[in-house]
Image (tube, rainbow over all chains, first blue to last red; front, side, top):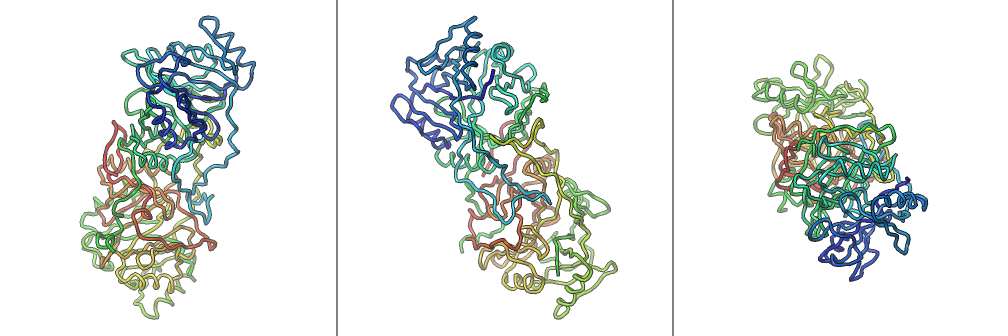
Length: 316
Length: 303
């Protein structure tokens, strides 16, 4: 089955206006702004849809309060939808709405949907020019400084679940996802396509057996944009959950923020890229494996006294 | 007079063992009191009782002499002829010439002993652009500084010192805080600056020295290792708007600070110098005040 990636994450929330503002400040583009639905998209068209919690058309919530109600996967062809429908119909209800999107639930009761992907191909991008000693690509040209982020894509979603093994079985055996890495005995990183980014889903087993949204993550172009995006988001009053920092598994730089729509939202960059030759690793799930380093309070635009200035100098 | 960059810095300190330990942890390769970068630039640590060194302009432990490398002996001869018109120039056994600059900082010149060594460019991934395939991103246990990239000197009479390096030695201005700071590159260098002169009131003395690393991952890996070893952050990690570098400064028991840098601007004669306002915004896009520690739980601190 030819998955492209997450096409949309649908939140059911108590305050649509606040939720939409958070994603605007985060750098998504508001393409629909109604009282019953707001839609905000990344550069490739993968999007966040925000609806009222009480919207009867939404799948049942996995937890109380504002949260993710449905993850819509983009596939490449109608024939993929037919195969998914046939497979999932074996043991659960699959419905098709008027625009052809399939709706069902995963093994944890999370709403999942499938549609022909509406993502746009990102314009061919060149790598960010980064200089190293005697390996120079940026000549007579200052590096890029961003005022804010403009995420390129919706990369992955992360949930806590009662059993990562059951969840892995569902996504791997029923939908054809592949395992990229394991947190031994605790969690699994899954990708929906090969070659592709390190993970589109990560499931972490919850000791109390709860299914909850942990976060939704958005890919940016480089570390410059990640730091600047976080600084801008902070300046708009949104709070860091953890970051910036760098993950050991997936190699990403990250910065997580609290999301009024539920869970956290993450900027990430420099995620591992996997072909069929990728070898999954069983990582020790020790806390120190979460990050190489991670700041807890975020960062602000620098407003201190430069160490190369004296106090007397700063006054003048 | 094609000076190509910094070849050596000589410190005089009260505790040479501690100095060697600092630079070893910083990632320089030690051999008999001299510590080297990958390219062969040297840090030499001598006891402060050594009477043969130029006098330090800062109190206590400090850098006493900065040796610049030039491409050929003809360059050294030309520098000598230029400086001998009004400076007292001496020549030591190995041919290095020594004198003082316009404000009395000890300087020297020798045919460079550095060898330019290319690094393999680090590949990064971004959505729509995979540069690193089936390979996890590099995580450095510690830094291995590649190049000695710049020094910073405090200059009460900054115009006089700038004129000395520009008019007498051919340095070029790449950026400036008019009247307050000049970023200078050696005439044979492509780095944004090898020498930054800064007016900080009436203060005089060596401020810091910087080393270029391979990538941002090494800046963090190096800084975390220094922190593990108990060395204190001066400022960082962070990112400079001028020179575009990611940075992390540590307090140096040998005097001043020592900085890790990565992703410096590369300058040719096509570069347009700019005038900047000396402000927090032009100093750093962002900077962490207390350094970062290897992850063992979420870290909180001042920015």
